[in-house]
Length: 376
Ligand SMILES: [Zn+2]
Ligand SMILES: [Zn+2]
Image 1 (tube, protein in one colour):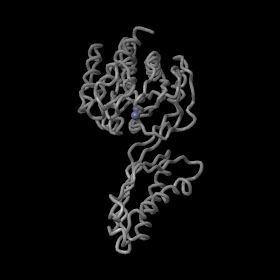
Image 2: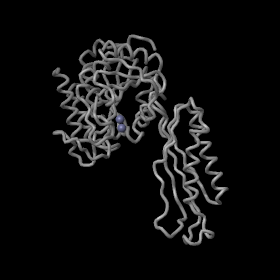
Image 3: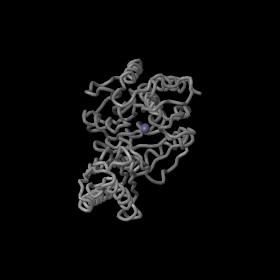
Image 4: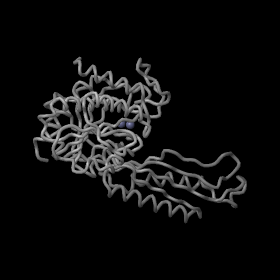
């Protein structure tokens, strides 16, 4: 393996060994800063508490390349020599791989800085796993005027050497809902004196499952999943309250609006039917990543030229990715790059193949250079 790749692997392992969860990526940021400064790469002053923005090149045109940097609250079970030293925290989404790949890109582009016909900003973004980091970067204004913002996620379901993307939605809108039900508590033997939240919760649970099956058109994709239900403490008491919490995944604002409206109607209907208080709290957390058409065809060509086996992603994945926030300021492109792991993302034994780091920096270097050459 090339010496440069060996260096990226060493950095990746150092990140892997010292994972930090969202908003606490202090050491990770210091490590990134040190590597970038050792390569004479400029770091911008920003109000970001963790994560950083680095810059190379000159001129008004600028492209941004993004890596996320945070880990997850998972107890690592890989048994690797460089497993997490931070008990209960693990780089189980491969953001350590992302950092190494984008550091490699920055260093490669720095070597040919004089030939670049523009400027490149490298976003090392905190707090992706809680969908807050990308918005924080956008709010600093450092991306205003960017020509394009590009990024990737490693994909353990694809072999190393495979690149996969599509035009339009790559990932879905992610919403979170919570329904609080307040009835009247009573003795279990005297239901006539109470309003039983269990009956209302079970009514809502089956009602919510009719939204996708009966209200959303069969050709529109949507998911309604209840993640938790809580009520009651013991066998002989009717409790006074209960709650349901879950997530909605959609690919268009229209379907999202439809689902929220139907949830609201079901809650209002249940409140009247059972004479209880049923309150819906519906939050829209993250938009779907929506790949620009021109960038997709450009990225496809670049991936082929970089030697990737190119696949077109057949449909959006119903997962969240806060990279979507960047499309507020510029056209975006997001790809999946094969990292071939037996275990999926967010698994305690997740172990991506580091050979991914061989080609990934070349892809981004080539993509940036193409973006400076071509209009979009
Ligand atoms: Zn993740
Ligand atoms: Zn991730």
